[in-house]
Length: 599
Ligand code: GLN
Image (cartoon, rainbow, N blue to C red; front, side):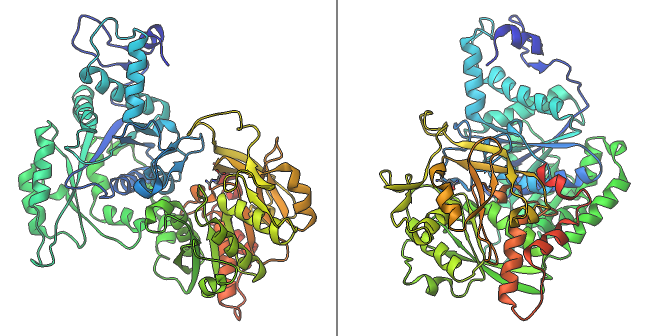
């Protein structure tokens, strides 16, 4: 919260008798940071985040400092309470911010850790404006959408520009132009471009070209109307990116160019591609990166030697896509099986590891509600490894436990993530330690053997959204364990968390006596973070979400380990690298070694 004195100390241009209200952070230098503003027309879900992150990557490769921000229209303050079934997975940043899955795309594409400053919702903007109003910060003025709400948006953006010291801030506006809920963001961007002056902002509109099967040709009318709508809001797009199933024809692009006042050479085709990691090269091939540099007058800031090096590293990775020599099938259990977006980070982490190990990863979605010990084999016979991902609630948990049991007893590579870690503890307690009634109190509140229980430190905190252990934490590794070896024999690693429940410390001794090894623990509390089973080819569980920190050029060791073990199982006659050697090989691609995993 800001009080009026603090606000006045931080900003200038605030006065009661002027219509100009545009709070600018003290020390802000106009012209230092440029802005690329990406918005969508025709429909949502066009991949604005993907486009924006790929373009940002191309500029980052050229030695420019980039910082992305996503503006969400909804009133939730963060994404913590959103159902992944409706909105895709909740991505968690190192600082604990629960945000939109697009932030995951940015982190992966830019190999950069983001913070809460990179994510903004209408809820955040409004609550900040309302707090300031209650504190009298607006000096007796009536508080209005324009200039106060739009002013808050610009303030947030300029703060990000200053704090990140970015050459270019990439602004992605959620939803579609014309939506009531994001209209003030668009107006704020119009004001920003006016205030910052020529060559400060580059507006990109993503649009969609229809290609009805019955007509067999590309139709651009919907795109034209969408662009008209942007023009009506006082914004002239500089670049138009046309999404389409197939490459957009010259004719369609010419039409759009004429109707949108955008030179033909800045109307690009961004057609479907098998992997999002091929998109940077698609944009680069048509010269989009240099168009942006020209528009923003920053050609003199780039470092081409840096770009050559970074681009070669990137192509080492992308050249392997589609050239896999091996293939494995990984079973993924979960209740959101109908929406792939709910598992975006896991799918990405599998792709990163698979590509690096030249192994195509096929996914078999496993609905666990009907799985029992008696029929688990039927569902799992054809998979080479299994992941039980994170989740909440009780649905399908007994089926997940049956899957874990099958994996443990049949040497099937297993990776348990968060809830999957807890399921592994329950399964082991029931079938190995003889605690037949073992359960989690999330599933059975009055369980007589609550091996998984609510965190003692969190018990006191009430209310949804406030009682979760969130964000990056250090995990202490136990020497000579598999986890220690695949993490390059590091003492600690940084992992990301989002959970309420944990192993009840009273059961640790019993579990360990029967053979579970807790190879990762919190440094100061008896919170178990990683488990493994010696003697099994790969049985690993973690209370964290390693998928959130896997990056294309630095795949996460736990996923590399899983795929290596699955590959060995699928090709028993070949002598392939074991999980530890595979991780060492793949991660050696990175000159900075293990250290960078903790970034
Ligand atoms: N529901 C479990 C908990 O709250 C697991 C959470 C998760 O998988 N993200 O601890």
